[in-house]
Image (cartoon, rainbow, N blue to C red; front, side, top):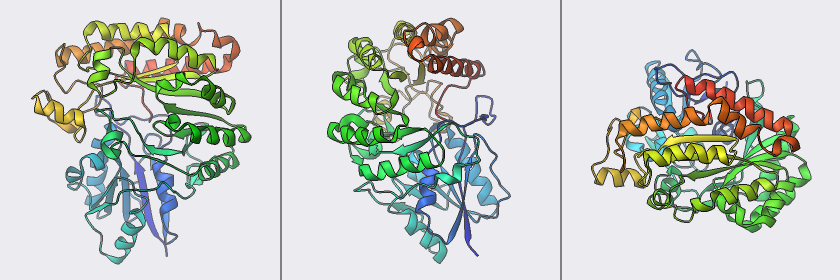
Length: 439
């Protein structure tokens, strides 16, 4: 009889302590189907995405694997405690565990630090032999993965696209970024044939869109051009993220667009130069953002952005001006976070050295409440300015301006109205104190 393993992606708690639940999960994490593919046939694998389903605490699985993504870390701990009380063996992984491995060991029988491709099979063999180690860690030197078990996602309440990974890590060195802390500028790419294999599998399962996972896919131009040429043959729509300086290469933008890419997401972070410099992102120029956005949109590509507030150059006025920037540039799906000194990041070390950690309870960090002392305002003022920003950007008037009062509404009306209704949903969530994110 096969051993059973349950893999869980927890959902965060909202500000009132209730679990954040949704009718449908659009941005499906790749970690669980990939871990399932790395699992030998001696195991039966079950996946649980808590945002859309309940954790089966009555499972007959003896081994429980739990991820630790961002603000869901408190829920990760609670689930781990419950399963250990039930006599299960709990393995913790994900980037929060990798950033705080000593803390994570308090709550799991074993922790997986960093990438698991080289250690997952070893951990499972040790588990079967009764020799489970407390820590598994091995640096990845090449990114080669089996075909994720996408079929395990069928039947779940998910959206109309699935994730495919092209690269891992990032050549940029932003001080606040957990990716930099984990990879230190290392960027690994998969063989193009592997990426295409995964996309074809998604198409076989009936999907016509995919999300290409890579923190900066176009940092290697030759790779990007070759990949786009292969993707174009598949006649599928896709989305990804990269740095805003892609606008400097219009030839590449045209190649990307013709291959089926219709949305690019950018971490713009701030509209103030001083803030970007303080975050080791001096290569970005906020004075050029508007023109870069126009160039990208001219190639038929819609834009989503992520920005942070509370950096060294931010003022209450600059945060207010950020709302105007979003509206004037018709950003379809904007998201914001309060700059947070996550333990393990360079920014945390800087704030700690300057005695500017305002809230030392790391488990309360949620990205929407100030936990450090900003340079130009109080933590309380920053938190209020953050929520004022969200409420202004997601006002009905601003939503209409950003999504419907644009030239693209005539070229792609269906897409424009889709963004409009997505924004209305986010507005409803914001009114409940739940910020838009990828769960």
